[in-house]
Length: 154
Ligand SMILES: [Zn+2]
Ligand SMILES: [Zn+2]
Picture 1: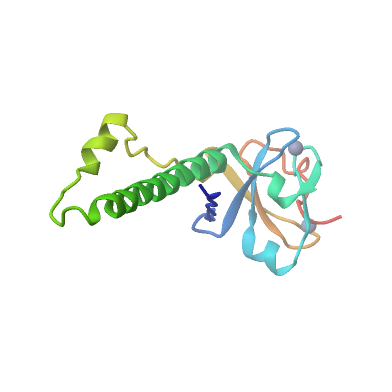
Picture 2 (picture 1 turned 180 degrees about the vertical axis):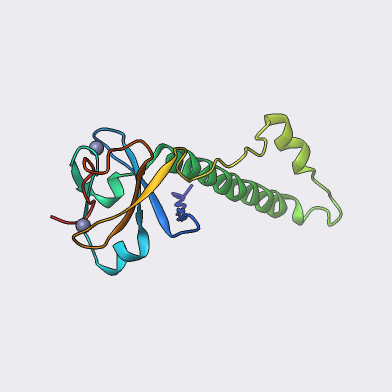
């Protein structure tokens, strides 16, 4: 059995805002992903508590659930394909018209087809433009604008 790797693309919202969650205070926010990539920033700063960490460390609960669900579906498809390939290999030579009902088998184990949860923020947000660098980001609706700091400027 070989290791399976599933890479999952996490989407930005329709405005290009990419959700992030602070690993320190769990505060959720979103950043403009194109700007972030264009500027080659390495780290993000939590707008609420000032925690600085690598971009990847700011995975949101929603994104974790989403990736988990997508990865599971992906792995299930791979496993099913592998199983059907293996069965085909095993039985293919014996009888050309053998029909193996995989649907029945897998439904007994009840994999189901889970709903993929939304990868977007589950909180109300407002948009903030940093007066110093012009970076656009979203913070929770009830955050005091004076209290939040830009995720990218020093
Ligand atoms: Zn924080
Ligand atoms: Zn800034």
